[in-house]
Amino acid sequence: MARDPLLQAALLAALGLLPIVFVTTTSFARFAIILAGLRLALGTQNLPPNSVTFSLALVLSLAVMEPIARQMHHEFTATTGDTALDELQLDGLARAATAAAGPWLAFLELNSGDRERDAIRELRSRRPRSTAPHTSGHGAPPPDTHNGADERTAADGERSSEHRSCDEHRDDEDRNGEHRACDEPPINDHHTTSSVAAPSPTADDAITHAAAFALTELNRAFELIFLLFLPFVLIDLIAGAVLMSLGMHMLSPAAVSLPFKLLLFVGTDGWSTLTAQLLDSYVYPPAL
Image 1 (cartoon, rainbow, N blue to C red):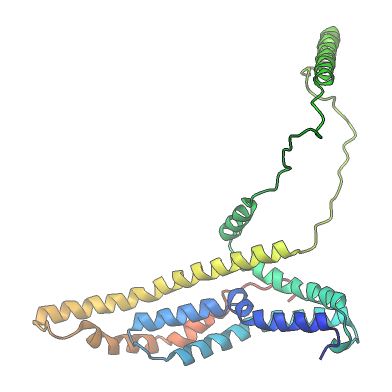
Image 2 (image 1 turned 135 degrees about the vertical axis):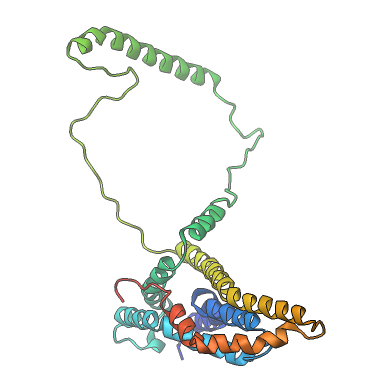
């Protein structure tokens, strides 16, 4: 165990938040929702049970996140070097965690929708901004109206001088074939470009990507559930129509259609097809 009390508190807090982070920033939420929706579409009530559904979602999530976890471990060990975990200080652990979060943030960004990401950024930009308080009292200096009037007069004089200078040189510009508005800045033939380095990922980036990823996972899960419901609803309609035509009003269409739903799902190799579709729906960073 780490010797630094602050490091111990940080590790305990991270362990407490680990289940929430795993559910919201991995593929577990999508898999759990889709499997629960499949059970509703089949109409099998509690078959498979919740324990089996969540266990299958957990295994599939581990299969999806395994390359990301391996890359995060590589970045963490590359930053810490040969230093043992119990010998790390809080600042060293923070640097290693920041380096390890790079592949994770890249995965979240690649698998989140642009619409969800823009919506989260717009909502975060609406946060109230702090404004300087307006104080009024004996200690506040009175506004200098004379200086303000002098500044406005000087600015008007400069604009008048610019217009006069523009009128004087207008004939020369017409002879040279140059036409430029009075308020247009002079053309500089020597264009310079400055490259600004991209900022490193921050806590705001992590929050934005995580929220956008969670919303994207929910949207895609419900889209797939809608597609799963279509063939099974069609079977229910056919079973209900047949029972109505035969006059069997007391017989439940769901009980009659359930064997045909299971036969359709198993006959089309539904488990393998659904699992392959889910595993192939994620995009990994180029480094992986």
